[in-house]
Each structure stands twice: as C-alpha cells, then as structure tokens.
Image (cartoon, rainbow, N blue to C red; front, side):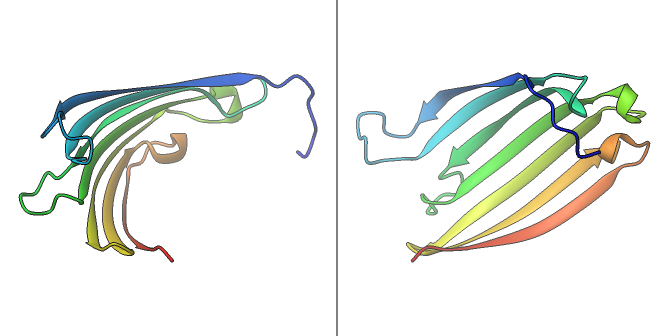
Length: 135
C-alpha cells in the first residue's frame, strides 16, 4: 500500500561448517564439502514472510579433474503469513553445478522445484542458466 512503518525489525543467522577437505594441510587446495544453515525472522505484522529456514551442501571439486567446479544442493522453507492471503507455506529444492570454464568464465545450470509456489496450492519448476564473466 506504500505505507511507511517505523521500527520494523528482523534478523537472520547463517552457520557454515566444513565437513571435508581434500587436503586440509594445503590452504591453496579449495576442494571441500561445506554444510550451511540459514534462519531469518521478520515481523509478521509488516512482512509476508515471518520465518525462513534453509540449508544446503556445497561441494567444490565434486567431479574428478574439475577442481574449480562447484556443485550444490539447497533446501528452503518459507513461513508465509496467513493474514497476507497465503494458503500454504513454500518449500524449494534447488540443484546446481557451476562449471568454471576459464579463470574469467563460468556457466551454472540450475534446477529448482518449488512446492506451493508463492503460498498457493500449486508447484513450479524453474530451470535457468547463469553465465558469469569476470573482467
């Protein structure tokens, strides 16, 4: 509605833990499996999302011979506020693989499956391809 509200509050927390490293004695070797968790909270009187819980795994060097590639699995649950007209909460599952083709070029195909997308009783699939160019 365009209203402005003073005192809107929220917070988030991110925890990350390395589960495995190929060569822990060599700091230059970045191949690893990392677990992360996220939690966020916002005021339900002001925002459509009150709670967000997510987590996932990131594995650099999953494919033999592709040490700079990154694979990932991400799960996300969003508690959508019923008063905002949402019938359901949303759950998303995402898989991706980032191919590091050169030091300045990467391609990342991404697949997402979203249960009750946007808080409605209906699922969605999203497929994307990211192109990263560093210059």
